[in-house]
Length: 140
View 1: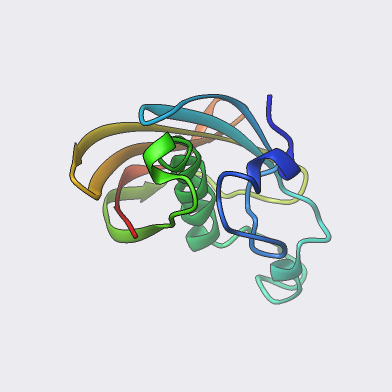
View 2: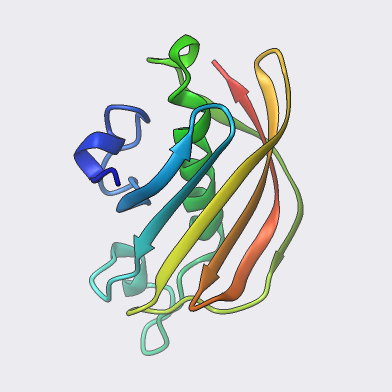
């Protein structure tokens, strides 16, 4: 299990944009499972949406991307580098994420060629799919 301070040693994101709270397990270059506790105090709930707070889908995707970044940037040859979005494919949102939910974020690296790769990503809440798709990344 990695806490946020340990996660920050692998990926460059920082508050308020560090979107994962802990990593349950990871295999460098292969996979990562992380968690995001969705708190009512999150900055984005002030405007998305007042009286009906829903976590923006793009932030669910960012949480998944950061999870995948832990897997890819924990490789020795990628230490100190950054992983950028190259594309988002086949992504579907299936469930709203609201304050009090805990997102389970799972990314499996399914393809890599040089600095480019694809991760199969799934976010769930209580075992129900919230978002699922493929994320393309570029290591820079």
